[in-house]
Amino acid sequence: MNYWLLKTEGDVYPIEQLEKDGKGPWSGVRNFKARNYMRDDMRVGDLCLFYHASTKVTGVYGIAKVASAPYPDETQFDKKSDYYEPRATEENPIWMLVDVAFVKKFDHPVTVPEMKKESSLRGMVLWTAPRLSIQPVLEKHYKHIAEMAGKKKGLF
DNA sequence: GCCAACGTTGGC
DNA sequence: GCCAACGTTGGC
Image (cartoon, rainbow, N blue to C red; front, top):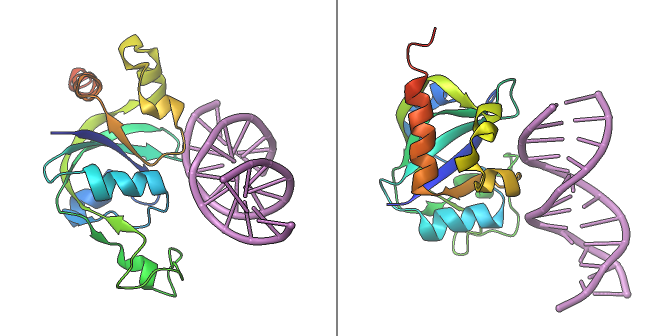
């Protein structure tokens, strides 16, 4: 079992939307490293921290899981899409993705400032590769963040 | 295949 | 909305 962090623009595709959708293709990723993680390393059932970026309160808002084997991102073939890729063909797609399914939404997000205060989270890729939208997460970091979310239950 | 220019990400 | 950081592109 591997653990991951998935970044989304919190104002565009928040965890509430994934909850409604249940499951869907993680489309629009246009970064080779992130693609390689989806294509080569993700396995069905892997758990993912669901991170909201570019929003008022950035942080981890819940948990998702990998729900399919990798397959081509359809948006690369769609001329009208922002994610259209003229070099890609059906025979030789460039961008691959996996389906992502909703697991749970935290009662309160674990915010970036809170995570930065935790010395045991210092090694997270989140701090050193700030522009990578899909990142591997160590099991101990995943568990630590899940615990932080658990402790916040019933805070208010 | 190097590297400058460009474009985008994302925290603040 | 600014701007630093960095991934990607394209000229050579």
